[in-house]
Image 1 (cartoon, helix red, strand yellow):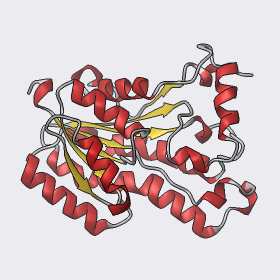
Image 2 (cartoon, one colour; image 1 turned 90 degrees about the vertical axis):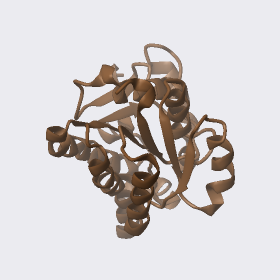
Image 3 (cartoon, rainbow, N blue to C red; image 1 turned 180 degrees about the vertical axis):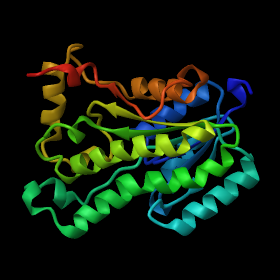
Amino acid sequence: MTETQKTAVIFGLANKRSIAWAIAQKLAQAGWRLAITYQNERLALEAKDLIGELPGATGFMCDVTKDDEIARLFDELKASHGTLDGLVHSVGFAPPEELKNPFLNTTREGFRIAHDISVYSLIAVARGAAPLMASGGGIVTLTYYGSEKVVPNYNVMGVAKAALEATVRYLAYDLGPRAIRVNAISAGPIKTLAARGIANFGDMLRTQIERAPLKRNVDPGEVGSTAAFLLSDAGSGITGETIYVDCGYNIMGF
């Protein structure tokens, strides 16, 4: 199968600032046929306008916290697309107050929500996609450096991203025999809709410029290009990994 015949489903499109959108653009440029999901009717209008900009792309509504919606989506994808070669999981959320209050005050419900939406959803969509990846394929999710080092105000999302990275490794082990690869991209801070909920996010952007070897913030397109590489045949030997696309920030001690 040539690269231009491959099909991917992308979860997590919210608006033009979404990392999911940057990835979708790069995959479309590489000739992939795309199915792109958005969470609900509130996000539908802008999402549909964006999806309409990509040749042959189709849109689907899917709330990844609802198993019946996930099941329905993959039934629809099987009927409309037949098989899948790639999946992008660009989904993460914690209640805003959990990103403002001290981590010590994380609520039980806030912890549950962050892990359900940001972590369990990857397991759920991978399980739905696997039967459609009869010839193997690739799965990519998005993480952040707050998973391994303390980033003030990132709080429960840092813990959830650590769980997400562990989930990538366990899924890579489970799905490896089916020739399905699972990887994470640890992107530097990017002004997305989700990032607005992080207190003092501007400080994260400024610190990145000061300390990263490249002395700048990452461009969403760079994350998109890395995702396209990981899903392509060029990434065929890579699984269970976290790939940093953060202008080198993670290598610095101080």
